[in-house]
Length: 272
Length: 220
Image 1 (tube, rainbow over the protein chains, first blue to last red):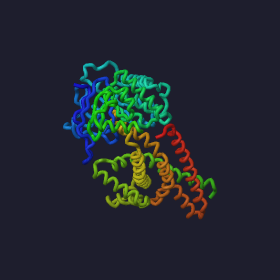
Image 2 (cartoon, rainbow over the protein chains, first blue to last red; image 1 turned 180 degrees about the horizontal axis):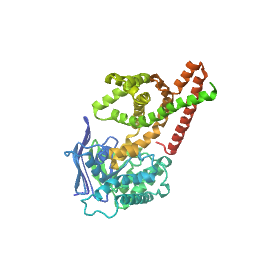
Image 3 (spheres, each protein chain N blue to C red; image 1 turned 90 degrees about the horizontal axis):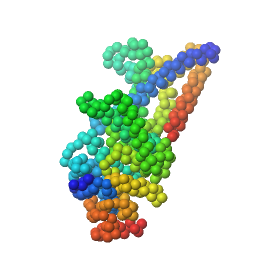
Image 4 (cartoon, rainbow over the protein chains, first blue to last red; image 1 turned 135 degrees about the horizontal axis):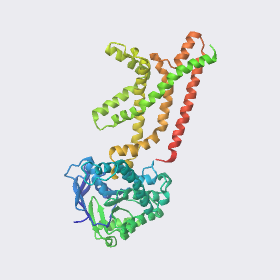
């Protein structure tokens, strides 16, 4: 069984079938690039995996645990817990403008501390730690800031902790967004066209960060238009069109496409 | 009547004006958030009811609402409620102002909340925030920044609207000046009262500008 298994995922809006039974698998520590023309269902697939829209059919399994099945009715809370298996980096960053990037990164961790403390300090928990809950929360928050600082250093923004998103370049914003997505250490990190809003120079710095993450053994799913990057860094490439996976394989499919659809798509990408 | 005597009397009326102004803000700003929640709820009956209420309050004169709040409870219970309790007229005026301004504020809040981009909600969702966390940690701070100018407009209008309270005989600064006019046949205290409003609104404007500047450290 693969680390990530997406089975027969379907999604329609009224009569518009955007995903018509998509199967995708990915092994731990590998990078999956999803390519294809606009309207092919790439972004919808990513949104379904992250529960931003709920699939009408199919299931998603991570590390042997089914975290979504269209036949099951989930509560908001269950979805909220299950979706943390995934992180998502948006095309338009979506950083929180009112917080400096350090707080952007540690906010999600801090907002979880209270409920974690509640579970940890429950009367029936045999591993209940010594000391006061309030002290534990305080210590945890200090630790979260340290984690956030380490993450920002990892994406090369150690000297920008106190900067607000409006003071940063697009590439810096996107790197901060990557750090934010890493804060909850998701099993699979997803990217939705992370460089589409950036110029070539800034694209390079973001792609370098993604390469570093790959070297660390992160499992990642990347929707991208950067063919060279996909070819070079992805362990697996999936070509989507018309709501289905048309072709998949390793990077050789870019050099030797089997289907006419992929050949036509690659030709149109090159001519741009 | 000397200038200092007039000033002293006007100041007493102005105290009432200020108190009405401040208490109205204290209650109507949070209440507006509640009304806003009502007009945005997914529960349709409550949403339509709230929107109809806001329509009535915004669609009728505040002066009329003052009369309704002051007289209708007395008509229902067949005894003049507000006339019988100490400061009853002031309380009635306060209730009318709070309801009226909460409805206006609710619409400003609604505009502010709806102007926040979908991306902010989606970013919060993928980070596992609950609805409450998303609202209070992500949406509300940005809404506050956006609504300072329109809220400021309403606040300045409120300063002047307080003088309407005299229709149910709350003795505000304008009423004091009118009394001087009718008893002593002096017109200038009425114009002098205008100076109080002007200075007070000058102060409010400075405070609003300060608030805007304070929130200027980021851009949405």
